[in-house]
Image 1 (cartoon, rainbow, N blue to C red):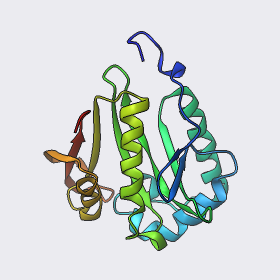
Image 2 (spheres, rainbow, N blue to C red):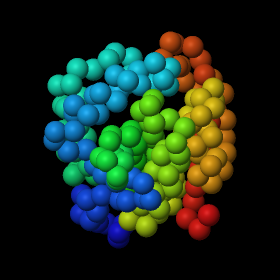
Image 3 (cartoon, one colour):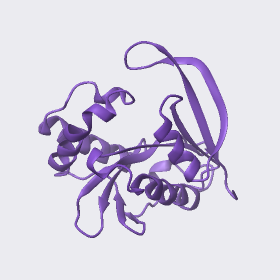
Length: 191
């Protein structure tokens, strides 16, 4: 991408594939399946995800899917949904967020539905999304940020080959209002 090209002109694939996953932007009609996974996973999501404080209705989740599909087209936020190849089951969510196209810099976020936790799907997705960011977006910096208490999220970053760059002490409040630390893991081209 040239420096002067607007991000909306970047051609992106309709989906990314890994060994076991189809990774794609949200689509109209995804709301029911995503909502079922959110409902199943609320106890595990609530401590870490600000958006998971109130259980959404299927209609609310469908609205989010459609809004995120529009943001994908505009290249404002690149939410991705994770689907198991062999049976089409919704596995979880990810994406490239907090994008700074002038660098370009992105942050990978992720969550997995509770019944599929511990199967390696998120590490597999992060590896595929990292390659996508480096190759398709020419990302010069990819970050994974997580609450320092979220050991499972930090383990994903480490398994995916990210380096711990910083621990920001008392840089934000958690979902309960307590001060917390943030770990910042990074990857750069050529690593």
